[in-house]
Image 1: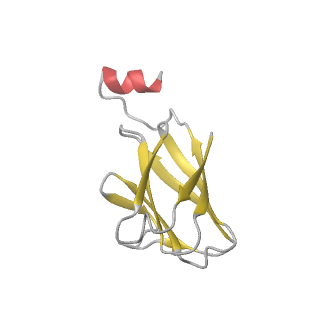
Image 2 (image 1 turned 45 degrees about the vertical axis):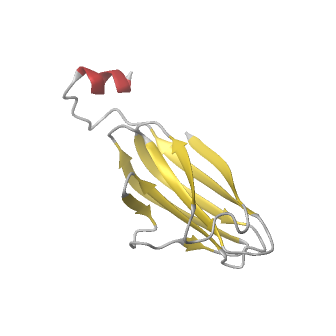
Image 3 (image 1 turned 45 degrees about the horizontal axis):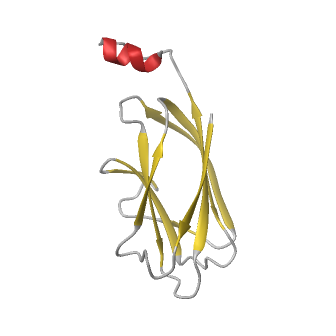
Length: 128
């Protein structure tokens, strides 16, 4: 499965000190691919950070953000989503005072049934 979204981040409305939160609902499985595209003109004035709950997932360094200008950040991953809720919080900010920017994000997810120990009917219901 591929999840794709475009996140508009308006100028002056979402500075780094008060980023915008976008919730991406996923399914259980393994994130195997992540792509983030910064269009031309961002000039590293726009940032992206992805969390699951309070845990920062991407980038791995605490309080880090991806930034860029006419840049595509793309990498393979092996991040398991095995406990509900299956959501990621995508935090974006825009310190550009002249322009709004839209960041493109794609996440590849593999649903996996093998290797998961079922300990309750609720967990079984999620798999069906």
